[in-house]
Length: 174
Ligand code: GDP
Image 1 (cartoon, rainbow, N blue to C red):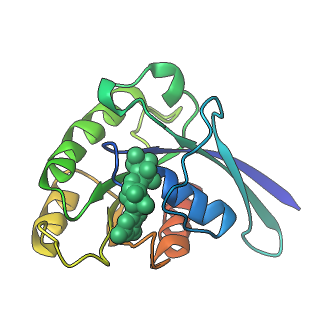
Image 2: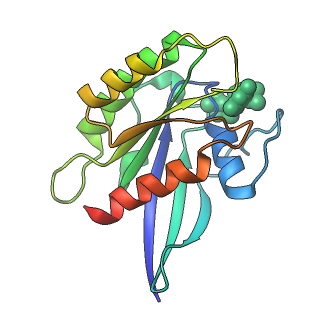
């Protein structure tokens, strides 16, 4: 059996749901008070990709470093894919995705020199106080070179596994 080790970054403003996303995806839980243990660099999730391939995902949550906006290069080193997340009830968190993507394109490169595949996730779509429209997200996603974008709800477990499979599929195809 072939095993791929993939380092994936989870970036976005504070409070958009990054830690909850990783916790949900890895442990299958949503816990309102959950906070990632400080000092833990990454979480691991194994996927059986096909009858010949396994994928070991290393999910690097920036946990509390959001305020620096521009991340340390060490964090980006060796990353082959990224989740850029915002909260559909926060216009500011959506606008920040532009900075996150630019920072990634500058610092996180594949050995080929290409930028790493990024998926844009619109979280908290379970909430009624939505302010960022699908049309706006779609235009932004296309203009900024994202693989695709998806609406997710970590709370309702909507599109979490689907989003990660889509990203892994893109990573393995480059
Ligand atoms: P982080 O700072 O980006 O890591 O965000 P957290 O994972 O700490 O989540 C911030 C807050 O948003 C917490 O109170 C979560 O319970 C809440 N949250 C995360 N995902 C969702 C979601 O899909 N829907 C709703 N309604 N709340 C969410």
